[in-house]
Length: 342
Image (tube, rainbow, N blue to C red):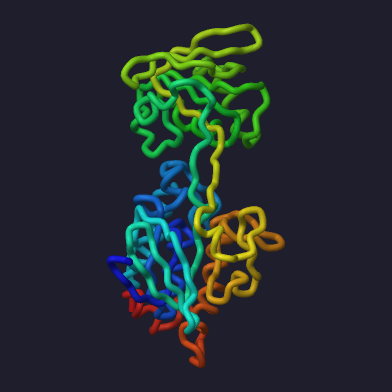
């Protein structure tokens, strides 16, 4: 039995950018939200994987980091007093006879609501770990799967392993503050953006970093403090001196309990329509990276559009028979009053 029961209009599962913007869009329509996220803070992948990495395709913000975008979205949603529940996963969802929903988290909180919005990105994500012995001994002290604060890597001898966008991006961003930088990839062919690959090769040519082709076979060090890595390459085995390693082998996405909600999944994604972003279950919507439809683009700006259209339909479910008056924030004194700017 849940130790706490909360009644609200909408429960949003996921506190990433799309979930946070949904709070704002729903708030404009006087809809109260509670937000649940498995992470210990808001922002989803933006805050967890690249809080200091620049994002260049948010309309009106030529450059914004993942953390800055999260902070701005929280500020934008603040006038509507949403309540956030972190470090929790929704473990069960049940539709009641009156059409409303009952959700429960692994922290024994129960929600009763009229609408559920799934904004869980790709689900809970875990880094793919390199297959090497004793890597767990160094995790959190010398081996890291994401960069949460660049300053933590200043003056470090860094070995980055991988050939995708994350690996190349962090080579370029961390090289200026690192004591030394080495990139290791199993082949001299990269899956990253061509511009990033060119910048990396320019750094190598200028003698500002090293590039090796091969694979890590073993790590060396004591008490969780890394001193070097053994590498096997075409020319044989050699050692790379390093006190920090960042392996970027991609992420394993786990959909978790969402997979058990009867939403007719397609390859771990939730099919929706493009009018309301409704799922196959009435009253449940899906926005952001977790949904799929013809022409879907996995962009934050696309998720913002989806949140706006979803909110219109959510209003009709929560307020049956009530007329929905479309208003612009630029001209509506009513909306400006809600936002505290009138």
